[in-house]
Image (cartoon, rainbow, N blue to C red):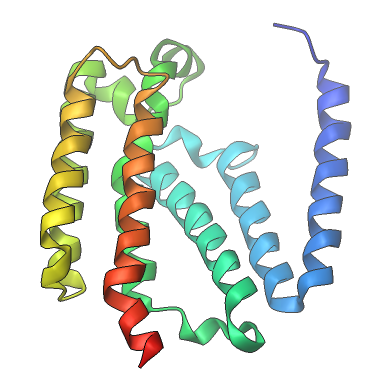
Length: 206
């Protein structure tokens, strides 16, 4: 809309970028490296000469990796001695898979703009209706696979309920494309909390 000039935006970017690294190094070297990796992924995703957001599967993987790194940074803050090796590998890969499948939701609201800009997202390629169905089905499958992946029967019921709710919300047009991701990611965060409490917390207490 022209409300912010390109030069103002670039200055704001560099200020925020530098401050994020300064604050990260005050926490610790491992935290700093995770945040630096997160920033690098964001640059490769968004900016030229790469701008890999143009390619649907690659874009989803990079976004999933960036979000998983944010989860990992939270783990570092809580772990004794910032021991990153204690982060469960099953959870790491489960988050990658879940985010790869679900992150195209954020592109539902930008179909026309992405098409005009040559950004080939899943909603651009499939259209809104089929994209909603494909994303919803993928999310439900990822919930189902999490029970097998973690070998945790206790997760079966919440996985089925939250997976079905996510699928249903994506299919109903009553929730517009600008709000549907709020519900779906809210369910995902709830599931991650339940996973931590039901599967990993008992092992910590023992």
